[in-house]
Image 1 (cartoon, rainbow, N blue to C red):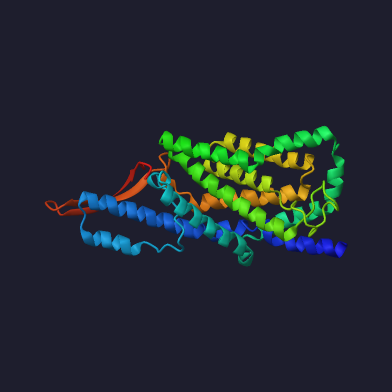
Image 2 (cartoon, rainbow, N blue to C red; image 1 turned 90 degrees about the vertical axis):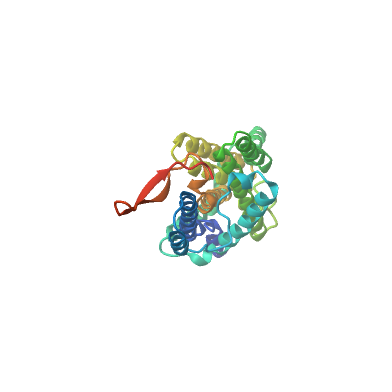
Length: 329
């Protein structure tokens, strides 16, 4: 049994942090694409101001190429039309899944801790899951209330929330609300796919099933789908509102409550919710880092534009760096 348990811990290493390195692997691609977007905006402004064609051609030639087919920016005009929205959303999800499930092959010394720490914690919890579960009262009332509270992290609760954010953003022309709705949907779908695949791989029995905690017993306990979803949304909100700490604190507190409630409801073990919550947090961060563009909403920092200054009479030629407020496009 000890050998089997150790083998289980080794197997868990890949999926526990499969979203972690994917976020880091694409950080350079994200910056490169944002840089490409800034060049495009600059070229447009210069063309409107009447700059010569050679300067524009040089700027275009300097722009780095896009490294994959992912459309990283959801502009307002795209998100308000079903066809481009669905096309972008499902293409991005397909590329997300490729990056997530191939991330174990990209472990390096820079992201090793993001793999080793969750692996060690989950391995320790697997050995203590039964003891932790028995430490609860496990009364009928506890199980009933645990199930009710944990429903906050269910898909039928979270989907209306992100959909409501999108509707509000479209109705009030609020780019932030629209972005949270779109990226929240992407995070939820990414989490659902990851949880569904891993549940079929590990087939762990739930605490209220026969032979509880056994892996490959036909159950669907590992990892917790509720934990993946609620922590993915909490992570996304924390990154979206990084300058409003109360949002992140509230989101993470709610995610922790839901995760604990899943244990109290005897639907998951502690290792299930910790593994699910870890993966959900990385998925939320990954979606934010990969698709979020500060040029896409009004509250973003100023957009840099290079404006040529030409004075033929005095033979003065110069370039001025102007920071122009972004208009949400």
